[in-house]
Length: 176
Length: 73
Image 1 (cartoon, rainbow over the protein chains, first blue to last red):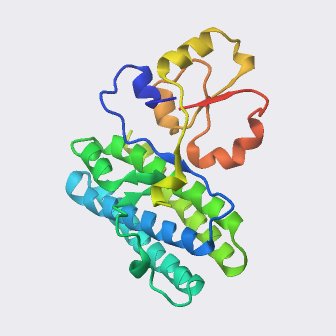
Image 2: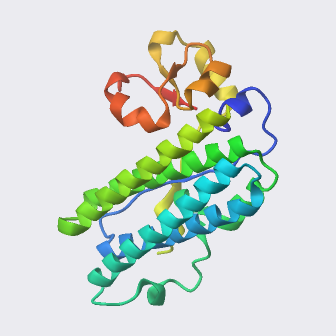
C-alpha cells in the first residue's frame, strides 16, 4: 500500500522515496552483478555516513556509523569479486560515467538525503529498514544467478544485510 | 544498459484503492499483512491485519495463502 500506515491515517505530506524492485534478464553477466552491488553499497554508505549530521539520537548515530563501516567492507568484497570476473580490472575504473550516486532500491542518494532532512529518528529507521530489506532481497536474487565462491559470497552478504535489518528493527522497537 | 534499468517500479495500491478493496471483500478472501515492528502494530493497525515484521517474513511465508491476494504495509 502506497505510503503505508501514515498515508492510511492521512498523515503523510511527503513519503520516503519509493524503492524499485531489481529484475535481471537472461543476458546479465556476473561482472554486471558485482558492479551493481558495488554501486549500491557505495550509495548506501554515503547515505548512512550523512545520517551522523542529520540525527541527534546517539544510539541511531552509532548504528548508522556501524552500518556505514559494514558497507565499506561489502564494497571491498564485491570489488574483489569484480576483479576476479573481469580479469583483474578495478570496478572503479569501469563505472559508467553518468552513474550518479544510487543506493538500494535504485533510489538516488541526493533524493533520499533531501527527504531525510528534518525527519525524526523513527522515520529514518523505517526507511533504512526498507533499504536493508531491498539489499537482502537483491543479494538473494544475485546469489541464484551465480555459482561457486561467488554464490557463497552473495549468500553471506545477504545474511549480513538481514542482520543489519534486525539491528535497525531492534533500535526502532526501542525508540517507539 | 544503465544501472537504473535494473529497477522496475513496484506496483502499489493507493489507500483509497485498499479501502475499496477491503470494503468489497470478506476477510477470508485476502491476506492483509502488517510488516512493521510489534510496537508500531500495537499503536495502531488496519482492522484484521496480521503482524509479520519484515525481518521475519521468510520464516512465515508458508503461512500466507498464495491463492489469495496479499496486501502489505
